[in-house]
Length: 208
Length: 208
DNA sequence: CCAGAATGCGAGTGTTTGCTCACATTGACA
DNA sequence: TGTCAATGTGAGCAAACACTCGCATTCTGG
Image 1 (cartoon, chains in turn red, purple, orange, brown):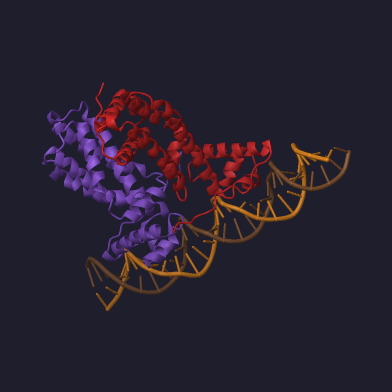
Image 2 (tube, protein in one colour):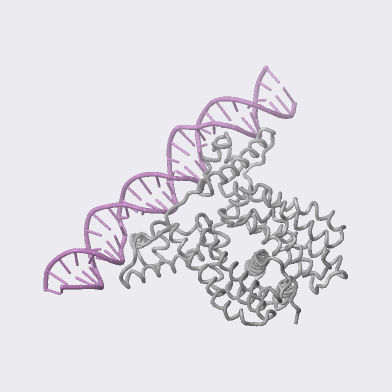
């Protein structure tokens, strides 16, 4: 249906030199995206910004799509890692605190390269890159569903799966929306309080 | 920062004939987008699909951007209209019913040209088209904040503005997410029940 | 019925840009 | 130190595609 192109690397970098090249190119891709926007992202521009020749770029990325795909993958992995790494610790806290911690984690994750995040979500077509997003989304979903199931007796929910779906979508959207449209709200403690209230009241947990 | 191009029509269609052309072209744009994706959207392809020459197309749309901009504008207006037109009626219902009605309206709005909706959200860069989106979002936001304020004494909220922000973002996200990633959920009454629960519990309204 | 405006046409043009390839340089390993 | 693989180079090619322009057709108002 949609034009689908290969985004797997053409060649594996074997020496340190070439690994550095790959990193430089990816960093340059991010810089060009932020500075010139998606329209201004040409392979020549990226190569120039990276201080590398187009040829070298094409040694490791089969096409422009692959460049963007790799960048998106890295970015969403970084964001997800920021949340998942702490989720284990959070699991041990009392529910009220756990909820707040998760929300604050989500906000913190959105503070990772925010300009890049904005460009990626606003401008970059997600053709053929949704698989990864869905995958990470599913991981989040399962983790939250797990947390809810583990404490099921403390909560007023019927189906942990549906509850997780609703909560993940809501918290993500509130954070994302605030980050893009009203960044000042993210510093407003009332927003965090209300987001916590949304979750705790839904879960039937006593508010502190 | 980003490349910004004019998207205002080059010429106003004055006769019925040309108004029909404009409509045909827009409809063709939607068809091409759905069938070939954003990458496959070329002005020549649109003209051909519309059974019109490229020249005619350029009489009314100064460039390809304008084509897409007009389509997006129409689509979001259609979706917003579906919600706003009913919102007045809803305002008179008892709160529990009003909440459910709004949620069902949101779902119904997402059933308007769903394939087009998917392509527009997944593939089309929103460069220079966010103003309209923010504007309509702000309208929704104000309407909901108004509803909340009007019934403030029945509700357990402190700031109707923040509450509206949270609720609009959440309901939109739950619906959108379900529509794109798990359409079968939209037919699951439990999802709607739980979404209602999320809102009513947050607002401190007794559940039925 | 006619003149001028509005609309429609589509082959062709100019530019942009993704990507290649023939060659140069550097590193690994014996 | 020599050899081959790995890596780097960038001028230039080829294709795609947005957009123009000179002309044909249709409509409108008098």
